[in-house]
Image (cartoon, rainbow, N blue to C red; front, side):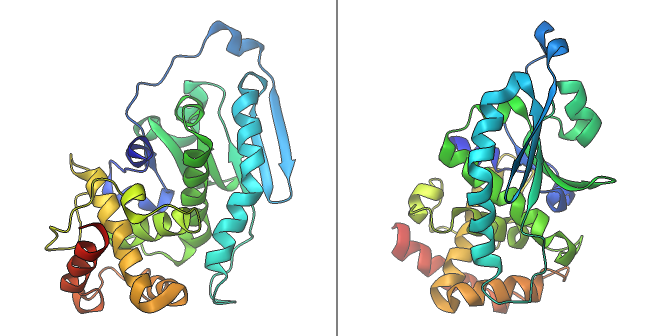
Length: 260
């Protein structure tokens, strides 16, 4: 999960609405065989996966996980019927080269593992072929669910919404039902918290993500699943969340009990 947590970090605070996911390894340069690759589109009941024939292994893995990932997101977002309107399907694109990736997401985001974008072709999840191929199936499932959550909730989220809420909620949906303990999903957590996380772009970004996720788990302990979804819907369109609505002291006590 440490590798996965690195992939779920964001380098630029304002980019959360794109659902950006960071990895740390350098991007491979396209090989000579890339020119011989052809575009392949795989269709599932919940969307499509567009990729190069040279990335067939990754495309096959993504296609096998796509329906399950959309269902996993829907199981949470549809808890309170009618409150979140989304298509319950997603198109995933795996660009065949670095140049194609940059053309879709821009040079600033070319090092990301997964990016939820909206352009003239609609909302899509774009995967970095090198980053995504290195993930285990569990990590790939979490990545897909995280980005699908951003796609599904983007129209409900203010540009100024706090990152701990937007990213914490996406992680909460992504990890939900996978059978991982809080310690397994957030290995860097400690109970030593005094404020809501804000540094999602500096050296402490991994910890900020894990703290944001743990806030959602804490809220679930008191509000239940419906309550967490309602909390997100109530605050996602705002530029700030009243600290009294979170109770940092209660969150800290919850962490002491949950992870020691």
